[in-house]
Length: 429
Image 1 (cartoon, rainbow, N blue to C red):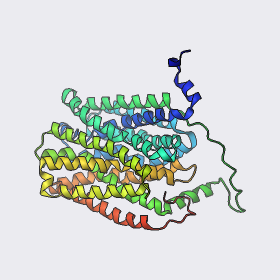
Image 2: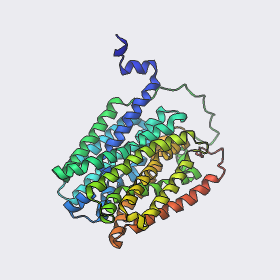
Image 3: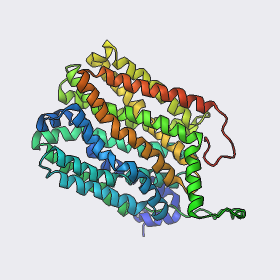
């Protein structure tokens, strides 16, 4: 065998940890593929409103439908991941997304489309925590932030590609064809993950844990429940929940309202407005990678980067509430700014969650944090859309997001300054 014919299996045998970059690429692609269609809904806003006669609130409800089942599904997915591993849980989940979107292309109207997106959301429940857990298990702390940022960039990357492609598909073939396209892409992601993902090499066996004290079972339902309740009460969990829900609200608000704001407020054509959303989502890809890499080297910890993102997001949202926010050029620049920070926060945030989780509970910690985020994802898009419909203006929606982020910033910045209990199993990292 020549030097150039060495296959992946031989490479893994020589240095099995080199395969982590393949895992990272596969997890990133699967994330982008599974979230492709839903990520492009904002760019399809004008087309869907015309084709199905939708209000802004109804358009936001489509996003909520895709994110409703993960409210509980993320917790279930976290338990499945800890028990059965990532390969089949993520692969089957992404496959469900693809099949649901394919069936959804036959939907006779709005109600049936909502049901199809509900089913797709059930499958997607496994992809987000599963991909994060797969990357966290392959990368050490010195590279985990960068790797997690690259992997989490899959969501805005998929959304950017969808925002560029799906409006063209809708113009040429109609809105049903966009679901077929999204379903096909999701199935590609499922197949790739099933074919390529492998568990990391087994590390050296750790020293035996201390024996449990009398009256305290080591692996009972009661002990597991106490662990979960202790995690929920930890100050670091409160920080994760508050920052996550406020910033995810901004992320989905920008995703669903950018094109409509530019089209109706700044008189930008639907096609050009969609391209600006693509630019914002592209900035989000860069933000997730750059900010996560920064968190690897930040002496003040990963959560400080999240606080920086919150400050930047508030500044951008405030500009949108002023007359400058109605000027096409200024508004476009602000949306790209919000893309970088309002999407980029997720890289350091999810790395913080994985490192703060107790040993063996990474899947549950990710599922818990992401399920809390789902509350905001489900409620905010239709709420913001209804606010726009009732007021006839986008200014109240941007002001609401700025207020929510400011409150979360004030509370979590104070918590970050507190000295955490070093004996806690879920302390700041």
